[in-house]
Length: 303
Image 1 (spheres, rainbow, N blue to C red):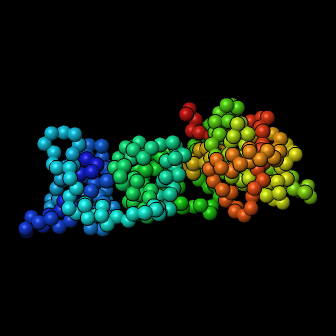
Image 2: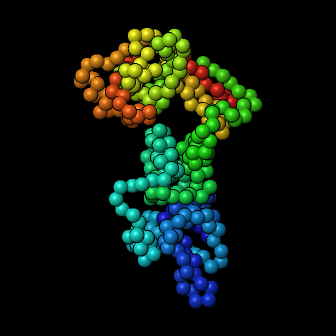
Image 3: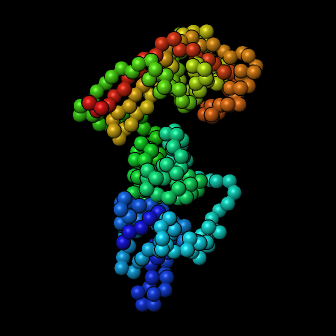
């Protein structure tokens, strides 16, 4: 038995030959199309891992080759599509994490689905609707996105990073300024080191953007990050892969100042990728113009 994405798996009654259940094959586990398959069933819209038995056969969809069956939707498929919720998408937690990781890697749905050996339609469904994909599906998605199943599931989000095992032969290397800038250049969450009004040191996380080589973040005038204004500060960003025990960190140092020009403030607010996670009124934009970069990366030796 061999199948392609989009084919239908039909299970028939051994006594009558009537169709008992059918579903769309949305995930392949072998490049040659042999079982098992991830199947989205027409009657429930659930996706399960299936090892077809002797009562199952494949109805091939059209794949650009001669002798294929009609590409019109199967009756069960049409019913499923009609019953599928419409309106504003309401993804589940896994779908949100998949979409975030995909955009972080600057991958299209089609490219991600191809890497994960699943149909683009199922990936869209997974990102837009609550779903419970199989472990095998998550493993393929994690591999396609360069992340881990744990990350996609959101497990361990309350635990500090770095509890995994160290590499047997780690290599710690310094990063040059250009590589540091490249790693810092996306938006996300970084940590700023400041001195509070009483002289005590503090390190706090902030959502940031990089605009014209400057690090920008929003805060309120009475907050701890606001103490950065008028001083030289350190700003740090890092990324760790617990599964592979590797990662990197970048430290930027430079003077911080308040953005006062009204048009600049408006442009920053309109183009910001996200609102401050801390919430509240945080309308003061602070700019850090780095004068130096340092960074390090941990990888297996020889990579």
